[in-house]
Length: 392
Image (cartoon, rainbow, N blue to C red; front, side, top):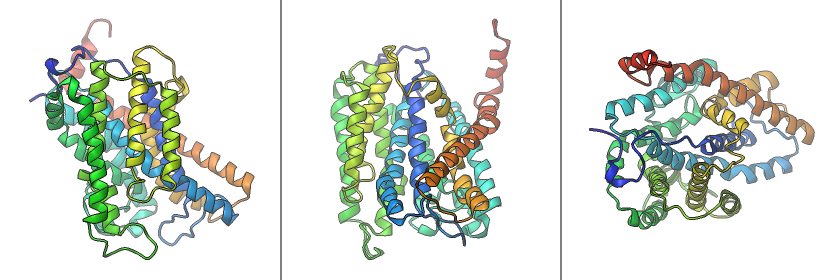
C-alpha cells in the first residue's frame, strides 16, 4: 500500500513538489502565540507561586484577556497546517511504513528528550502514573483532567497529531477520490462538521462537572478541545486545502487580505463563547491564509513569512514549542522566583524569555531533531544509495 494519491486524482507532477517557505515561517508565529498564552497566565507547577510578567494586576488581567485565544487558535492552525503539509509532501509510490518512519522520527526524538527533561527537572514530583500517558501520547484520549497536562505540558497536542498521522494513509485515499469540482463543497462540509462538534459539545456532552462561572464543564472542554477525533476535522480541512491548491482552483486571495481577516477573527474570539472560540471562528481565515501563502510561493512572490529570518525561526519552531515548559516552569522560577515587574521590566522579561526559548528550541533542533532525521528518516539502503550517487 502506498501513501500518495494516484496521478488521476491530482494535477501534481510525479516529482517532489516545491518547498513552501512562507508556511515554514508561519510555524514560528503560531508557536510564539502558544508561548505567549502560557507566559502571561499565572500558571505554575508544583508548589511554585504563580507569577505574571507585570506587577500591575490591571495590566496583567488585560494581557491575559488579550492572549486568551492565542494558544487555542495557534493549535488549530498547527492541525490545519499539518493536514496541508503532509498532503503536499506525500511522495508518489512511498510505502506506508516509510511514511510512518518519517513522521515518527520527526516527532518522537524531540518529544522523548523534552519529556525526560521536564520529568527530571520539575514534573516528576507531581505527574501521575510516572508521566507515562504523556510519554506515550495517549493523555488526550482521557477525560481525566489529572492526565491532560502532566510531564511536558504542551506535548499533549502531539497525541492528536499522532492520531492524524496514523489515519493519513486511509484519509489520503478517500480525499484523493474527490473530483476537483467537488473539493470546495467538501471543504464547506468539513467546516459544517466543526459546527457540529461545537453543538454536540454544548447540547449532548454532559456538563455535570461544570465549575461555577465557567462556560464549559471539564468533560465538554476535553471533548471539543483535546479529544483527537474531534480535532481530526481541522486536519482534514488542511488536506482539502492542499488538494485545492494542487488542482489550481485556489481563488485570487492575497496573503495580506487573508491576514487581515484572521486578525479580525482573533478579535472576535475575545467575545465569542466557548467552544465556538476554540477553532471555529479562526479555521476558515487560517485555511485562507495557508492556501494564499502557498499559492504566493508557487507564483514566485516574496512574502514576509518566507524571508530568511522567518524560515530560520520556523525550522526551530517545533523545538521552540517543545521546550517552553522547561523555560517557563523551571528556568524562570529557578532564576527569578516569583518576581513581577513594571511595564519596562515586564517587557524586557517577555523579550528575554522569548529569546531564551528560541535558543533552547534551536539547540533541540540542531542537536536532536536534525540528526535524528538524517539518521533514521529513510531506510539505510536508500541513504547509502544517496551518498554514493554521482555528484554527492
